[in-house]
Length: 83
Image 1 (cartoon, rainbow, N blue to C red):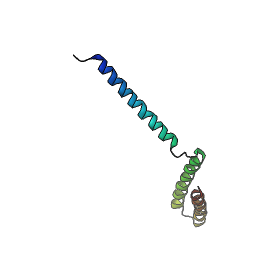
Image 2 (image 1 turned 90 degrees about the horizontal axis):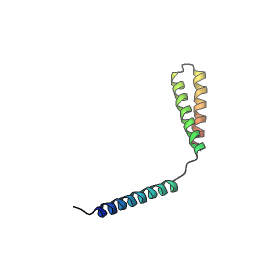
Image 3 (image 1 turned 90 degrees about the vertical axis):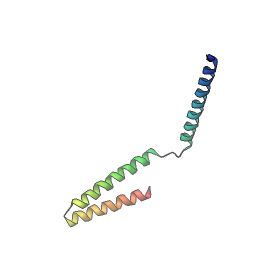
Image 4 (image 1 turned 120 degrees about the horizontal axis):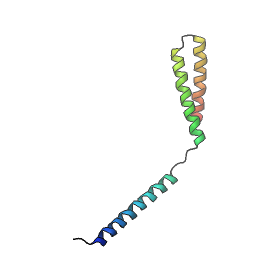
């Protein structure tokens, strides 16, 4: 029969290793690049607008309306590139 104390020591070592790994991962996440939530929301909004305008441009047969949509699409592209 094995010594019960050895199992307890092994369990404590495993626990300490897991705890150290968790702390290391947390530190890496905190040191990583922080993204501005407002800019991320704006970027997602502009991406959605670009997708919708592209869809409308493809579906619009009227040349004047297509020109308006393409102008709006160019503005969205300009704003995305400025982010």
